[in-house]
Length: 134
Image (tube, rainbow, N blue to C red; front, side):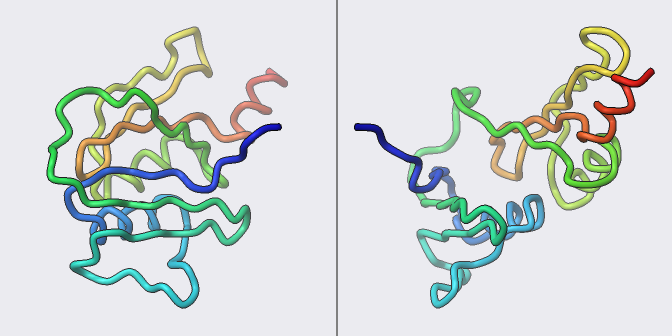
């Protein structure tokens, strides 16, 4: 017997605002028939392609330490640099730039969402393929 991931939950201070940010990051949408609205203490969003759900739940405690789990994101199109710039323009904060950490064409960029939850931006598949050809 095994289990499967029903959804990924994120504790937060403002479920609506954070769900709106992550919808822009990931291209997720509200769950049909269950729209997210300001003041909702729980807001779920859905990847229309894969069916994965993210649930944002308001909690009274503030984030105090580094995440023990985080998302590694790969741009669907464009470059890593383009995606970092796009996400910073919608409210992400750059925490660390580790591009080139293991030589040319390697590494990632650590960003934080508006509530300080860290996530990484990897190189796109096209960038990786081009590196492997060089």
